Length: 364
Ligand SMILES: Cc1cc2nc3c(=O)[nH]c(=O)nc-3n(C[C@H](O)[C@H](O)[C@H](O)COP(=O)(O)OP(=O)(O)OC[C@H]3O[C@@H](n4cnc5c(N)ncnc54)[C@H](O)[C@@H]3O)c2cc1C
Image: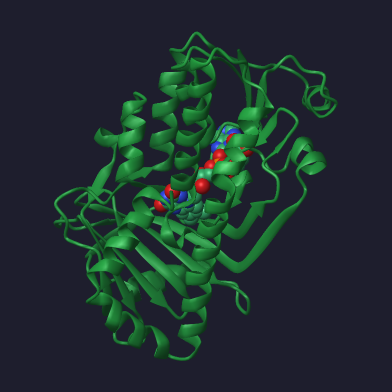
């Protein structure tokens, strides 16, 4: 069995590792002209997903910082806490630096004899895939901008957030740092995600419909909304334009799209990669089933994958968009709705339990 993976981001490297655990040959086509970015981006990975990765010999715990509480605040009520998901005994999420995670996976991949990199001209390679002249059992495409996506997977539903996410790592005085904070401000949600006792990663997703922000303005807003840390310095700031999308059809012949290529969501819930890890688990189980039955890997596995995941992913995408729209609207009317609703929800243990499950396990 031979599976081709087109990409080189986190989902691609995680899947490559997991598939080789099943003795499947992996060919990776990496366009190679991808400039290293994401120096300040961090990822919150849900406990359930960390456990799954560990079972697949991808252990990130030693390189991640666990948090045991998430607190949500609202700007208009003098930064009043509106929700609190802890403290809990177990780790709710662990935060890892994006590039640290990539290098961990790269190290593992280098040791795998079953993985090789395809060295071919881009046009020749993509033509062979689009024209169905390839030798692979399955192809997994992570890149939404290549010829395959443009010619075979153009039916997408888009969500324009009119926002950019600014990411920066703050160095601060030592403190007990196990609580993540998110404040819904009139500019957009700002998250403080601890990565050590002296460093916190900040993701500020700013509405930019009417105004483009300068870096110094973002830093000033971060300082204004910070009520916890004594900042010493900041890393450089990176900016990501935010666009949401879901793909209408996940597969075409033996080609499956994957990762942000099938669902791209706003980072306010820290769920993009978490959704993909849950997809990987499902795909992995479907492949195991075929192997156990002595069947070939063909497009039937892709069909089953789509049937099992598409509606849940769509619901997840819609729920995150609802939260985004709700707070955007609410901030325009001075948090009139959220104040009342969250006063009720803060005391509702069932709601809190459900939300924690939603973030940890997804909808399945
Ligand atoms: C500001 C921000 C914060 C986020 N925080 C979280 C979070 O806390 N938790 C969470 O679960 N998700 C989070 N996400 C979402 C998460 O980053 C994405 O879901 C995940 O990175 C998608 O991976 P991808 O490979 O599908 O796409 P991308 O990483 O966007 O990559 C796009 C394409 O480039 C290729 N590529 C990527 N990196 C490389 C590389 N180094 N070399 C060569 N090619 C490359 C990929 O293969 C793919 O083809 C966040 C997103 C943003 C914008």
